[in-house]
Length: 447
Image 1 (tube, rainbow, N blue to C red):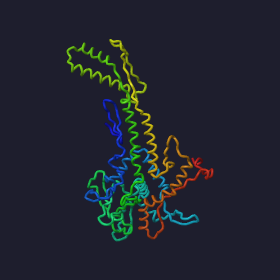
Image 2: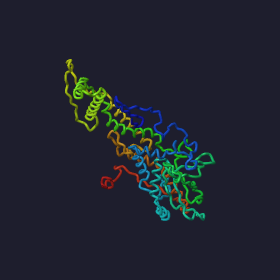
Image 3: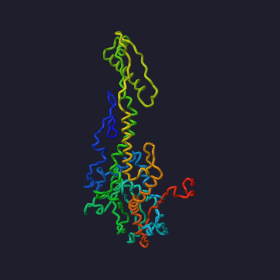
Image 4: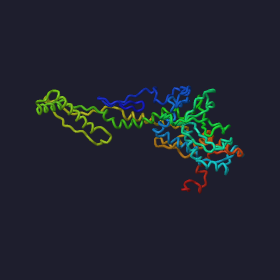
């Protein structure tokens, strides 16, 4: 017996069967889509009371596991991360012109020198990955030695994996994210107590309070007081269904022939076999005779199965000799196909897969035109991609950028208070239609 998603495949003496489990049952031990308040009560981890992240307090790892089995999710999220990153980080000031607010990209040797003193580009890439997957990120602030004498200076920033961080339950306050005072960092896969360490929450208005602190930057999710929920959380059932389809097809390819035929053997054939055995072994008991007959039947069954079963046996055939018994009746072998409608089943699953692909893309918040999804051999035109890109840049980048770079911009304000008004942003070059580009500058002439 093998279980694949909501299907259980059972191999019986009568054939190979698939039993469909009830769709309304929980799809896995990791997800519960009833909308329950799983962060309503604390759980104990390493001697600390923490805010659970998911019903099993391991939602980031569960999201990771399901995405690693999906053929679309990782690519879409990588594309989204790349679109958010654009041409990379750069310093800017806000200014106004005749069309409204614009960014004036600038250089600053002091701020750039501080950024270059640590791997700020790797930090930004990691921050965008965390945000696109979990709608939030944990940042560790490392302060310089001047913090000991009351001089605020952020030495470097580190983006921590979401799977390794949990909010410590607030003992006072209104049970809100603003009331959390500490973050527990450690290995939540193995729960080894030696890996856990408790950090205070970084206070950007009092940065000298701790030498090392952690802060959770996130997009607030409706109805949740602590953690943000992934934008594609509601698409998880479709992800599960899409993940199961390749395994189901592979399983059917390996086993469907065994359940697709009934082999009829003439009784006279076995009567003749038994008569010959009795002549060769007159001293055998009835039990020995039945055992040998069973062995011969099993051997022949395996031989037929080797010929008929498996996708590698195309072109093979089964041969036999028809004969007439003593009563003049025609005796022959028959292999009778069982109507299984496999083609209809696979076609139905393929349609479900296409719906799952569409639902998955919508859940990830990226237009199919930008996701490089090809359905029925058709891809979007260049103009569709261009318009989708303009809408994405105009509506879906600002909030993500503010949250992902909030820690860096807070550190710039703390370290360089005299340079007020300078921020770190992500520069994105807008792509024009080829019709609007001079002939010499078109992409086809740049190759």
